[in-house]
Image (cartoon, rainbow, N blue to C red; front, side):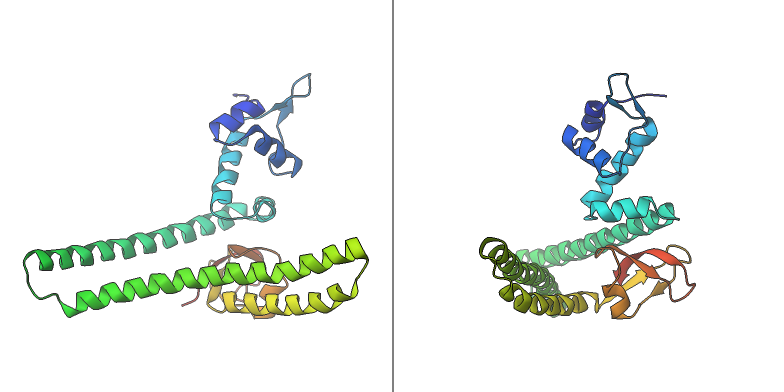
Length: 238
């Protein structure tokens, strides 16, 4: 069986040595062996695991969530669902882009031949542009609102530490938490979850989603269909 040093692992996965060492300290990628001098040594299985961690990180999963999934009862099922959802999203994007290309080519052909452009083609273009614009605006608004919410909290914490003034924090903190709940409710309004055990798609009560660990990719929930408790993958509700 092959043995890899930290540097070799980093090179093979196109990450830094510090990244590999950091994953070790976080308990995500513990070396299978150590040399007499205390240097980390990794196996082929460790290399596969690091590549998986890098892939999930690139998908937007937090290290905490990745660790939780890898340590869960059915990591393979959860990871398969996550990857399937990613494939679905990419497929939808590719399909939409292909339709845009076909519509644009149709319009170009009409311009080239100086014929009347089909009304449906123009409507399709406008619809797709408007849809993309709304998605981008929604995403930007969520980011902006989240940043704006964090500024007052951090500001009052700094004021408490530096000046010893704790009253502004007591006033501001509940308000920012309320806005956080409203923001989360807005995000999860169109979300559903896929159970890794029975593959059922279910929509839990908002309070159950709010008070569980996870991210916008997967959350620890109890399936309303089979009762299994574990990481469930987020998808778009029908």
